[in-house]
Length: 68
Image (cartoon, rainbow, N blue to C red):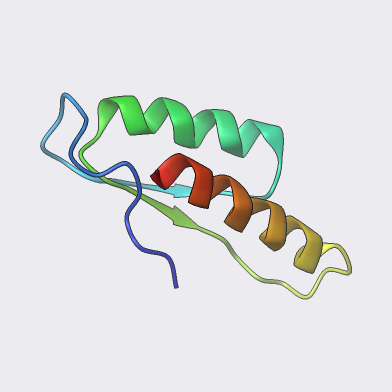
């Protein structure tokens, strides 16, 4: 579903995968990993929660901004 983010601007040649939500903690973690790894692959687990659509939309907006 997602492509790698922050590709090519890191100290490591290895990629990272991270479980994320649409929250602030996930945003901080993705931003920090972008500085350390060659690519970051966010993983969002859909489990049918009522607020899931809002979380996913916030996550998409954040990841689009980070990818620039």
